[in-house]
Amino acid sequence: MAKRIIRINQADNVAVVLADEIKAGETLTEGGVTVTLKDDLIRGHKVALTDIAQGCDVVKYGYPIGHATSHITAGEHVHSHNLATSLDLDLEYTYSPVTTEAKPSCNPPTINGYLRANGEMGIRNELWIVPTVGCVNGQAQAIVKRLTEECDTSHIDDVRAFTHNYGCSQLGSDHENTRSALAALIKHPNAGGVLVLGLGCENNQLATLRDTLGD
Image 1: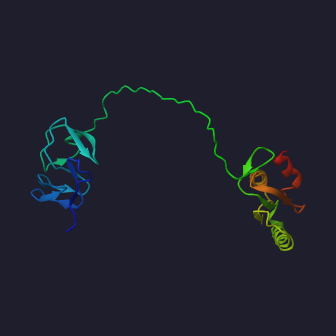
Image 2: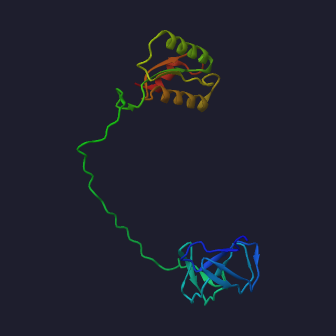
Image 3: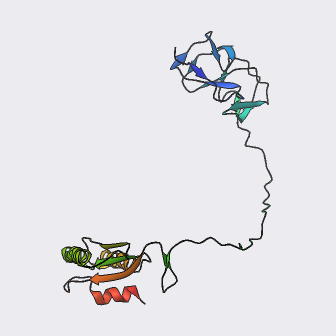
């Protein structure tokens, strides 16, 4: 038989109704406690498992969720008519941070990486081809294919072309976003070398891209 009520935590003095409806007079056992309902209850509502004196905590999930505004007897419906929050008390808040002095380690951690000229560090050493426009994606891929077939690239972590469909017929901020994204990719520290490949007639001209790249 399916559970009709549940005591979520052993410290709880209320249980939650799981059944669609439970009638007054029904006797149920849950979490080692047997209780006879004094009220009709519906799913999600609470029933007292023990007597709860006025002003005492109503405990659910193992923590007080409020206090009884009147004496509640075991089996009685626990809801807004006899339960109130305990958060209306004036509390004085103080902030007392504890600070500790950081001491440099005698053996600082290290990783295997690639320190670039601008001070950034990559964790891979790859050769990239970045097209300024989607119209040269095929040429970029052909260059990668020919290079890896004809040259020894065993000392390089990877050779790849970053193909995309942008750089042509873009205007305003749309064009600027593409240029900024490609510039960030070109300057990424995981690339040991980057070939930027243009077509010549695209909106995203190499000269403008150089200005975005900076040094």
